[in-house]
Length: 144
Image (cartoon, rainbow, N blue to C red; front, side, top):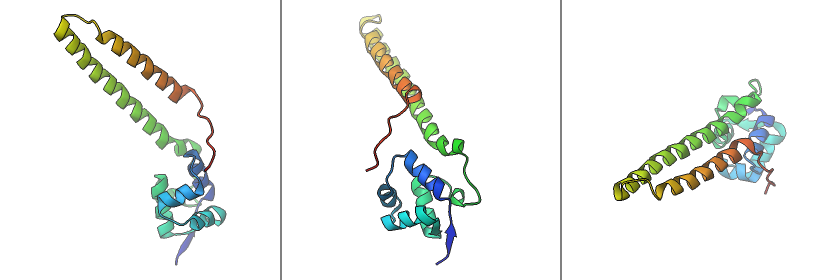
């Protein structure tokens, strides 16, 4: 079996960013716990193991090579892009449903009556969610 050296620090960093234990990474990648422990300890992995770990961590297999370390800013980027996409989805949902509520309110009563309160409270909730996501540091999770 052809084994290659991979960047153990990168694997550990990506795993810990997701608050995953070695056991969780093993189950997501479809590997044994012992394989993940060996990979993180000495950095040797077969091509199949490298592909499974890269797929589980959602990165390109080439990033696992020891000769091409990944800068810290790029490691965090996929998670941040996901958060931005999720924020855009929530804002779009707020605008569409809020517009529909105002439309129903105006159609039924001729003026904006009850819908302004629904939109106000939903908007405050959405704003608090944005503040929590982008301005509050997450609490560290214990590895299970």
